[in-house]
Length: 240
Image 1 (cartoon, rainbow, N blue to C red):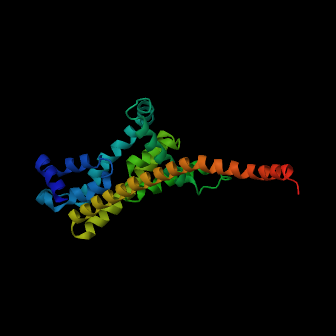
Image 2: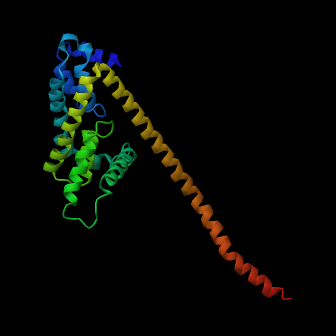
Image 3: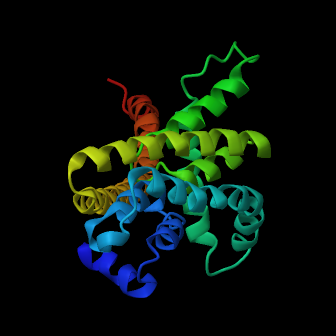
């Protein structure tokens, strides 16, 4: 994984701050991976301190939030109208819908007065956990799907992003090697993505099996329901 860092070192030279800001905008890697990336030993004397890495990673990643919040719905609507991306986008939207349902499922249905506040708090907590697939990209998309106001999306997602950044800065600082933290985070990304893909194909196969078995079960039920009538007819035709 050090080859990834060396690749950016070759491109940006001693400008580790700019590289950190740019990497923090990448989906999946985001701020969580950009902080140990900027603090990595591969930068040599140009490696960033913890607070510097946090600042530049926040600078880059937080710029994504307002842009994504504004363009998410129009882009999704447009892509769903194309033959090439319609199926992929619909699947992606369904995944986000499930995640958004999980966030608000524990909210009290009767407590409608604070439901919106707890929804914002759920988005904040979701993004604040520094794990793959829970960052600003996913958090912003879910917030848009849940219908949060633009201002509240910024507050919830950016607030959670700051918390995640503080946690990653602490971990990278006390680990003794930011490169190892970056390596572990990339491994976690691969594991989470692999699990998500595997889960998707398993659920897809299960739905296909259920759809295939449904007509068979319906036919069996019809045969079962008609069987007593057939027995009764036989008894009437053949009295003792």
